[in-house]
Image (cartoon, rainbow, N blue to C red; front, side, top):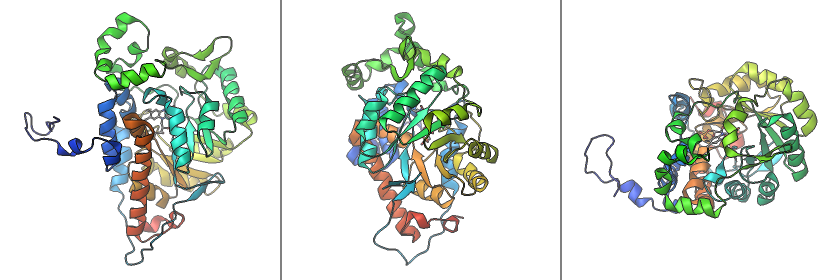
Length: 402
Ligand SMILES: Cc1cc2nc3c(=O)[nH]c(=O)nc-3n(C[C@H](O)[C@H](O)[C@H](O)COP(=O)(O)O)c2cc1C
């Protein structure tokens, strides 16, 4: 039995909450799905999703910034129906939240990226596929009934990136998302402790001390081997070598820094809507506009890159003001509740992206877990709108928050 021991050492209090949450259908909020993911995944995989960089200050601040924003409801005006649909880059979506790129989703659940794309499509929203995915981009596009975006890292050099861009265009991806906050990978201390790089090294001696955490999760281990074992990166094809191996990623990331100068050739190669992800200041917002961005994602990578930078909800007004309607502004980081979605929209975001909120669901129970995550956020958003006295996400504005 689970016991609550965090506040009083040796406590005998039983944690009834998590006894009750045995299946995703019983999950009441995203935190419940997080707990289910923690129980199914090996520590190294769970912490890869759950953790941030450094002291994890920015990761926590992303959530706290939403908590500090206080609503100003209009009462006795509630309508029965609430409109949640909007458009993003001209594409109609049924929900004002999209799925952020989450690398290595195939480690959370067999064929994770295809499963995630299919759930996003069924929910009527957009899935963004990370460069660092385990499923081929063509299969992922085919798995969704709705538009899909491709997130680009310049991994493997310009030729590998051009190859991915060409494939994404041919497969029918509708926007290219260039992530600019990953000059080097953030120092994720939990990954270091859990032997994240040793476990993918292929060296049995290095791996041995960290293997027990995998053996402690037999259900996950079974799924992992059923899905072919350690994934490669089929969308990072090194000319003459083939798909990049997992253990090569850390070094490749360091050599793949994107700069503003790269945006020219990326735009020329892509010739479609361009989204720049990882903007936190007015300066970078203006540079993104100069680089031809059609949309900007206010993002700090979920607190996984530079620690002690601003929470995204805090940075949002500065970016919205600088952009002044010349591009769409999206936000990600810390969205765990429908009320967070509403707050971001009040401050001028066109829509938000969710990362961990769906990754926990995927790790907990695959498609069922992700569908539950979507349902939790959707229901909470509707409830929030009705209690706010606003029946359309398009009508949310600053007057609804202090
Ligand atoms: C496990 C994990 C992997 C991620 N991988 C990528 C990635 O490959 N590319 C990228 O641009 N962002 C990546 N991100 C960042 C997300 O796209 C998004 O910015 C972040 O998750 C938002 O914060 P949230 O998790 O609090 O919602 C990743 C995030 C997580 C949690």
